[in-house]
Structures are given as C-alpha cells and as structure tokens.
Image (cartoon, rainbow, N blue to C red):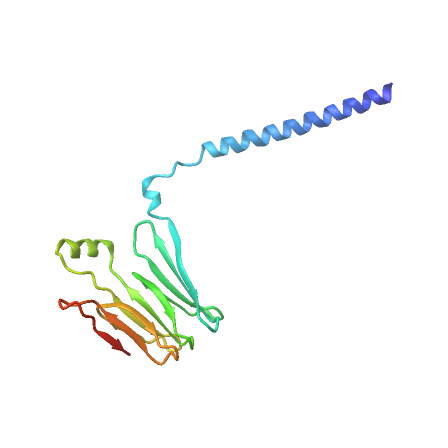
Length: 173
C-alpha cells in the first residue's frame, strides 16, 4: 500500500504545481490587460488601411494604397526587385500598361479642399498622372474623369468631365 500512496501523493503534487502555475499566468495576464490605455477617438486618426493593390503584367512592379483614418490617402508604386519606390499622396486608381513600362493614377484633393469646392458649388475634377516607370518622368493631365491604356500600351486614353452640353472630351496621349 505504501508505494500506491506515494504515487497518489506525487500526482496530487503535480496537479497542485500545474494549477498554481496556470493561476499565476492568469493573474499576470489579467493585470497586464488592466494597465493598457483605452483607445481614444484621436487614436483612430492614426489607423491605416490597405486599399486597392495591383501587380504589373511582368511582375516587377507593385502598387498599393494606404488610407488613413484622418489624412491623405497615399499611393505607393514599388519595383519588386530594387529599392525604387514612388509615393504619391492623394492618389488612387493606379493601373499598369501591358508592357509594364507605364502607370497611370488618379490625383484627388484633400477633404477640406473638396468641402470648400462643394460650398462654392464647384465641380470636383480630378487629374491623371502618367508615370514612366523606367525614367521616373511624370506628366499630369487636368480635369480627367477616367483613363485606360491601349492594349498595345502605346497610348493612354483619357476621358474628361462632361461639359454644359453633356458631352465629354476624349484625349489620346
């Protein structure tokens, strides 16, 4: 009987040690959680959200948008094999040409600028940016509502905003 009694005591001792260890972990974790600061409304402005993203057809270029809780959305265009990166605030809607040599994106306005234009009853008209990925040369086009590359990547087709006659201008670059 004595060896059986020692075995029971040993099991009880192991259970007691394990239970004590778990209890100490639980108390430590709950105490640490109580010391974390509460999230405030001003903290939301610091949050970032990953928006749209795309990859060029040759896989060498990536683009993505970062949206802030409060602040300007930013477009990033990065070469996947080098450190070359382009960063454009207030820009969205990036597209790559089929030959992966060009990219086009929309340039918008800050929220306060949009509010001011709306108060003045002005139409908010975005711009388009054409970027040569090899040279880094940029060309900006005003009053562009939409754009796309031709299939052979030789031209950028852009549509302006409707005028008073409800017609739109089409531009070819």
